[in-house]
Length: 373
Image 1 (cartoon, one colour):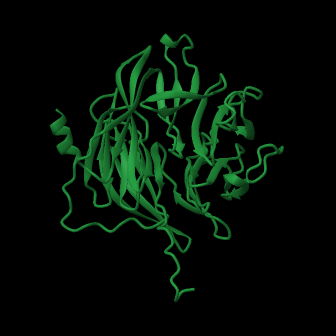
Image 2 (cartoon, rainbow, N blue to C red; image 1 turned 90 degrees about the vertical axis):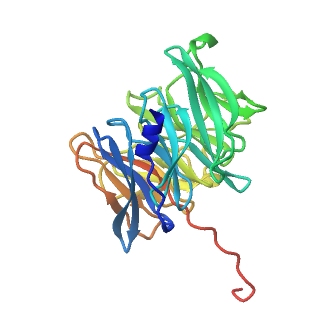
Image 3 (tube, rainbow, N blue to C red; image 1 turned 60 degrees about the vertical axis):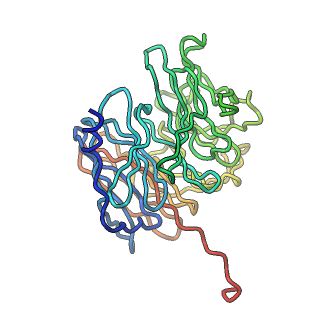
């Protein structure tokens, strides 16, 4: 059966190499909510006008749009549910439309964590084995993306209710872990660090729902339900790994869906208000001891709605999903650093899913030559 699925999902390699995606291009997947295929699109902004180009099609189970992450200017890694509701297949999809399978039995609905380690592109994938309602065995697998023949290395393994990588910095590699019933603290959440082939607890988290952890600037940023406010509201808290017993300082409070994202040392997070604003800044400038916190600057889409960041560039350009409520369809916006104005990227029709995979990074600036200086 797997052979048939692989043949169905693999596109023949083109005879000529496809051009790379341009810097600052936004890669998304779009599909009707009950479709069995997702169209990959490359969105760019030129002279204030959004342009789109198709980058291939991915087949999957009905209504289960792949999640994933941009690797570089010609590859995206996708987690695709195409054979079982209990696990996913991880593939690399390139700019020419070709696909290569990396791993089976990945945890469903979980995007791989992509990073550059020692100059090499790698993906960290959580593989879920023997799932039961009481918990599963989770392997954290490192995959070399530049070497198709490289072995898959299991860097850690443990039993839990759920394990997911913390986005952002991977040295050390951190994971959000929810303990299983056998631990005696069913559902307790904490951050573990991969060390010597195991997971070592490094930070206990509040006993409230937590989501969207990001490690950047030597600190951990994550959204938690705000126990001091009404239902449906949340707070962005920042934790210092050197102070594992503190509850974290509140940086932002507002409607749930603050959605922190980072690139390099740049952080973007929603304000939790309905005025279409996000906060962007360098984490080294954030002073969480101030009330309100300083260092994150407000950026406006110019539209009413709850703005939820989906990606950010090192320069502070943000991809924002604008939730306009149940009566109006959402919109995807490109909100660049001033003075450039925001641009509407996608206004999908009702019952259409849009998943953002990331933003293509700009190439590193070449060092100045003697003549240029």
